[in-house]
Image 1 (tube, rainbow, N blue to C red):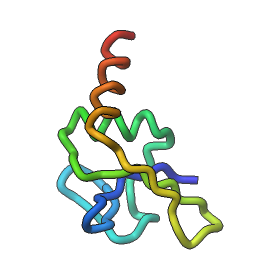
Image 2: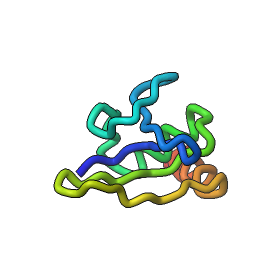
Image 3: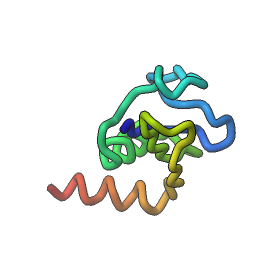
Length: 80
């Protein structure tokens, strides 16, 4: 299983800052949804969603990131 960031409009996957790919197997694997959410917020990525890619599945399970969730996640991380 891979935890990816996907641009909601273009459906491209995050590979690196300023670098996006259509291939989910070339995308950066955050390994945990919290890491993906925190990264998106800390780097000002908007319009992204978490895409969970299972190796034996041709499609993703997608979870949109809302601005409120990203802000809450960052606040919880800062208080630790």
